[in-house]
Image (tube, rainbow, N blue to C red):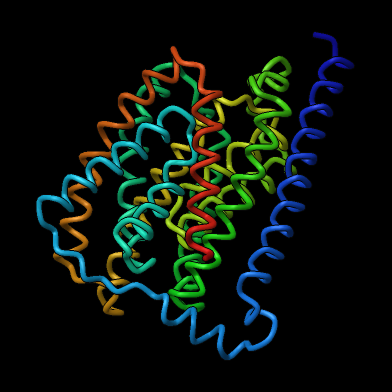
Length: 329
């Protein structure tokens, strides 16, 4: 492909990204208006809002009986399957499921999700490494920023409070679902940028700044909400570093292993000290999600090579919208 064609293809891809973000922003604003209509106290009585949100905070009263274990295994397997196939979306659905189905406090759900993310990423990564899809010379510069980001995210999440964080997560899920939905319909096969990719691993000052930003945001989203950050990290690599989808997924898994590995220790210590959950509860939950996420990720990475993920992506987006509105309302 000629340089002019490569530049044109890259410009087209960035146009798609901008349009999808504008689409998501407009629909998010519409969603905020809908919430304002159905919850007029949002505009009329801030004190009432604070009390209402406080009452929505979930407590950690889960008894890890057989039903809970089976449900946790199934949910983490499904999240690992999606994460292995798409490289993103699994963590969002897992946290939403823990909040909606189990009615858990978001701090406990966040801790469980980070643990599952670590095991899922660690399980899926070897298959991508065997295919030499990880761009190590670039990704190693994201490790320290991702650790800093996850620490900041954890501390900020604890500062804003569980009820407010749950609401914020709901709006975040709505926005992401609209954004990925716009991108899915604008570039359904995600092939616009693949044709211009070259394995250029030269580290320039501009690339170092971009990698620092990508790593920091990945860790921040992981620490704040307990999600992998792939929903941001993958398109950021495509837009700013001209990396196609499969390489971007592999790189994202590497960052997740590092950030979630550190995060799972931090979130457990902070949560137990703050009384968000007990040590026994988090260990039992980690055991369930580790088994489910590991199995789902193994199958998901294999299916990603043989399956058209377009329909699955749309399904995940729809589920994300439903979950987001359920958390907001």
